[in-house]
Image (tube, rainbow, N blue to C red; front, side):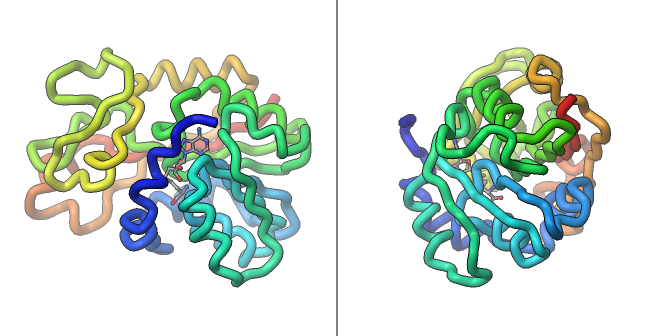
Length: 232
Ligand SMILES: C[S@@+](CC[C@H](N)C(=O)[O-])C[C@H]1O[C@@H](n2cnc3c(N)ncnc32)[C@H](O)[C@@H]1O
């Protein structure tokens, strides 16, 4: 299996990234629609915050992640019961059966996943025909500001794809774990190749705290991208 970069930052991530009122997550769940009665895979589930939310709302929830340390944190929370967690690379995830999910969600996971095409192939494989894929990412067109790193390094351009590590003072997570930058067309073309038809996209505004201080300049740009796709 690939190196799990989040193993080294599991405590940091668990402590700082658990806000259930996060506007991006709210948008993602809105695009997903009511989870009750649906079999939902939370791909790149991390410490399971979204998986638990889905299970609480009545989904049969499965979480899959590369980081054993984050999965240990997810498994340590026993409420609600009945969630299945799988230690897997999204690019193969062979423990997940073909056509066994009505929906796949991926909240801020795609830029962490090194093999985008592999992850989308898995998504296609595990979804039933007509199933739903929803994902959120930092907007590929977000250039950032002095305080907040964008999606590509200030030393390069939007067109330079690849893995990099942020330097922005307020980009506390990306300074630690880095991210894969891909252009918007790379994302959309990769989805199309796997038969994932985009049916709705949203660009939620950043939270109110971004409208003042160091983040103000960055908040003038598109910061987040959330989309729903249907497997054709
Ligand atoms: C920013 S975190 C998001 C976690 C979770 N979705 C959330 O909303 O808190 C990105 C996650 O992607 C996971 N990840 C990175 N590469 C992966 C891969 N190849 N397969 C599965 N998970 C991966 C990391 O371990 C990490 O948990």
